[in-house]
Amino acid sequence: MSRVRGRTPGSTALYAARRIREIEEVADGAEIDVLVVGGGITGAGVALDAASRGLRTVLVERGDLASGTSAWSSKLVHGGLRYLASGQIGIAWESAAERHLLMTRIAPHLTRPLAQVLPLHGTDARSRGAFVGTGYALGDALRRGVGTPSALLPAPSRLSAAAVRNLAPAVRVDGLHSGIRGWDGQLVDDARLVVAVARTAAGFGARILTRVTAQRLRGDGAELRDAVTGATFTVRARAVVNATGVWAGSLTDAVALEPSRGTHLVVDSARLGGADVSITALVPGSRSRFVFSVPALHGRSYIGLTDVAADEITDDPRPDAAEIDFLLDTMSTVLADPLTRADVRGTFSGLRPLLRSVHAGGGETADLSRRHAVIEDDHGVLSVVGGKLTTYRRMAQDSVDAAVRRRALPTARPSLTADLPLVGAWPRERTGEIRAAARLVRRYGAEASFVAGLGERGSAAGPSAACGVTPAELEWGVRVEGALSVADLLHRRTRLGLVAADAEASADAARDAFARAGIDPVAE
Image (cartoon, rainbow, N blue to C red; front, side, top):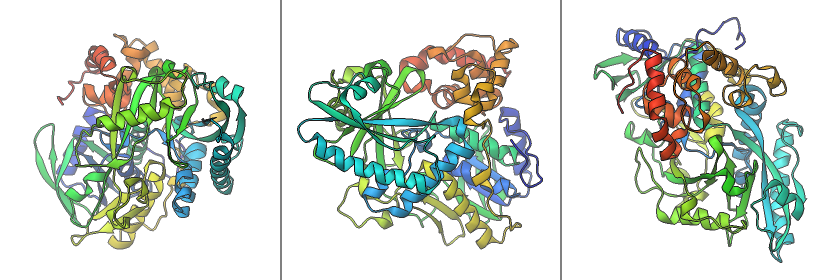
């Protein structure tokens, strides 16, 4: 990481001993400018923004980094196309601008262009193609407006039936007229982005304390509990930011949310013809709603996305049968061999923290605004709610700006994060210079050579996990990425936990990684 305004960042490694030391420092009365509650993408972003401005920052998360909604997205960096359809021009522009920053400056190593292929079947294919093509063209205008080069995200184009089949071999030939190809950004993994943001914040001095629960918040501090030891302590801070997503309302009465649930299915990529594109299907009866596939890690693909009202806020949201059938049936409309329940290797669901105040009532959650807001309650706690993964950086900047303005924090420095690369960042066009396997480069960027070196030195000798995940990757997760439990490694550092059979086959390898690092994993 480069120097930022005269300051050289310190170690970005997160590990058990550092956590213990920093908890002791905080409990002993270390001065805190900003206390951030919540270790998802928004909270990690707030911690990075604050710490890089020189503010003494502490982040507490009751579970693991990205253990909530931030690990259950579509793994896309959206350019805002869907928001244009509902007239949310400002959000669409903001999304395109933040996508540009993520893909060109902040995290080129964790992002890539993803082609979205929409097959057009039937006698009305031409009219449907014209309608969708107009939307793609508007999205491309946003791309040009924010300066993203066409070499990175090309303009949309029409495809012949043969070209559709070449890109997506599983698509049904019968009735195939043509297709449209658009482009968007894809994350190698959303949980990896959260970890990278948190580690970058740690490099600027932020204390990143997982498995620490905030039991009560005030505008000038909180009561905290270390879930590992059971110890409780009170801390004082000049500003407190509640970034707990759908759980924000449990810590303040000032936030009114109407959460929705988004569900994805996990299938073998081979079942979709091994396509390295997003196969997109129009929802029957709609001209602007889609179900799509996303090629993912470990030979899997995700199929999403639903948008239904969440009956309750839970740590472990699950899809209902109707959601699963909806995704299978819609995707199957464009496939030669329809999907069945037997093809589903796993599922995951996340809860979106949608602001209730923007909803007039009587509509679907898909119609709710994805705007974000920073809300101050009567006790002075600032809550950042709404928004989405792509715009996390702007949400974080607005939160810290509000804290500086309302709490007279000891800095006048503006946000630096629009030009601040995350740990591991490396120019996209120079990834061939990194001495490591392409698979590791895609997951770790410039740090891939260090992960590979860990294995070459023999430190990470041990059993491999499922899907080719190496002992070195698992040990890196413990020594550098803050994993404290077997579940941290399997569910968030590697995503093997998305398929139960993979997690079961990898549990011994994960435990062995902790043993090699000389650390006892915490129990879940």
